[in-house]
Amino acid sequence: MGEIALNIYIVLFLLFGAGFGLMTFPYRHIFSEGPNKVETPPNGPTLISRVLWAMVCTFLWPIMVLTGINSAWILAKRKRQAAVAEH
Image 1 (tube, rainbow, N blue to C red):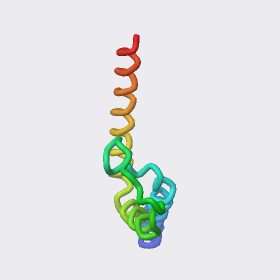
Image 2 (image 1 turned 180 degrees about the vertical axis):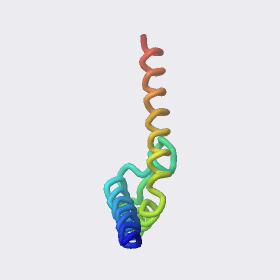
Image 3 (image 1 turned 180 degrees about the horizontal axis):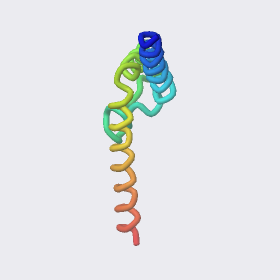
Image 4 (image 1 turned 135 degrees about the vertical axis):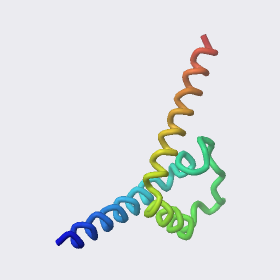
């Protein structure tokens, strides 16, 4: 019975990661490449890049969440500093 429960947790972990990867693809710069957007190809993102992002997130989504939180904090800090500099 314990093996089944463990397998369910593993499957849920992987399914959540895949969903996370598919939902965050347009915002991947926040999770992996820093707060600056990367230029996309002229024809738009390719299927291969979407699949690769989803695969990476499937296994590494906890790390991606932490890096996303860090990037969001950096962006908020920059926004606060810009607001203070304007006034």
